[in-house]
Length: 151
Image (cartoon, rainbow, N blue to C red; front, side, top):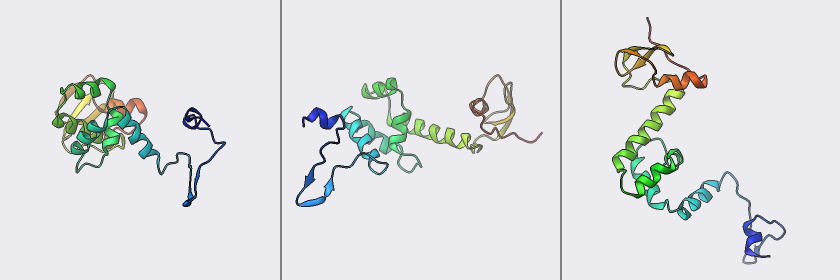
């Protein structure tokens, strides 16, 4: 069997190691797919970026991998060109967490003012006033909850 057949996922031969007969080839499963994704990221040259994201997500309830998956290819290229700082990565990770909270219907702690959105109606924002669109519009478009302040 050639290496190409092995890489293509041919299952006609499963190697067994005589010293450890329990070590046979296993297909990817949920338990090891994160390791496979990490190896793919290293192959793409993302190991330094993952290390920077690990620093940026330290003490946050989000993983470096989740932040990497949310970055656009242009963002990754900008980071490689030293145009994106760790502080920017930290802010991006925090914004992903805020979006996750908002999609669950939670109002971010700093959204303390009553505002009126043309699309959503009365909403909580970080400033008072009237707006044409707001961050809650994303929820409305997806059919997710939009918490409304009392009248």
